[in-house]
Amino acid sequence: MRLYDLKVNHLRNPLGFRMERTVFSWKVAESLGKTQESARLLVALDEKLENVVFDSGFDREADSLGYRADICLRPRTRYYWTVTVRSDRGEEAVGKPSGSRPERGRSRGPANGLPAGPWRPLDRKSGV
Image 1 (cartoon, rainbow, N blue to C red):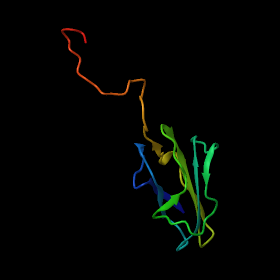
Image 2 (cartoon, rainbow, N blue to C red; image 1 turned 90 degrees about the vertical axis):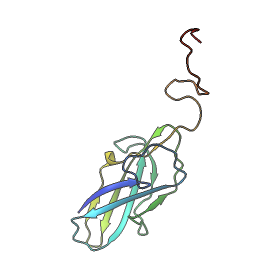
Image 3 (cartoon, one colour; image 1 turned 120 degrees about the horizontal axis):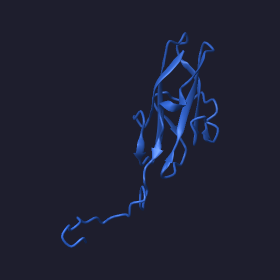
């Protein structure tokens, strides 16, 4: 069994998006089973998934077409996630955590050390 096409809000690698609701989806291939028995979603602050901020546990109601995680994403924070799926034939597969990284975009204020606008063009003659 193999998991592929892991997405967050229909995006493969959403960086810099403001997400009020976070919905995860995945697809299963090469499975002997006919249906998904349960799935477990993990969201962490690191790629090794050690600093976990959300763990659904194995959920029999998890829908691979759209699993809504009740998680509040912080601005300017990169998140890593994976899903583990069990089939009705006892198979288990784990998605690759580096495949999708929901990252909450800028909320307010300066980014990358630049002052927040309003911006105005530089007058090259006066230097202002």
